[in-house]
Image 1 (cartoon, rainbow, N blue to C red):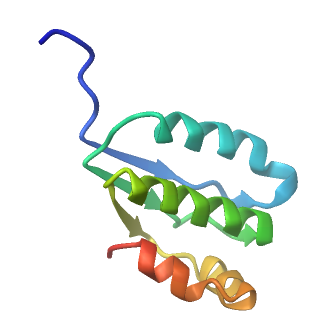
Image 2 (image 1 turned 180 degrees about the vertical axis):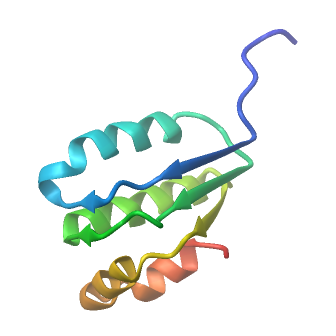
Length: 101
């Protein structure tokens, strides 16, 4: 059946700053990815140096949405800042449940 082929795998490199004032462009990019179908999606957190509660919520909600679509989400290049804010917000279990290393 003719039609557009959906990518099977994709990687998104999170930016250095994931704070509320900087999230609009990240949100728009993640929405573009969320509209497509992937067998595997990788988040690269290696550049993240600053993250606040809004940035963490965006990541967790994106992970939940992708998982609901049966997309395997992997995490590469961990960022200690992400784990610190997740712990402060009580989201460390939620984050770990949504990621497959």
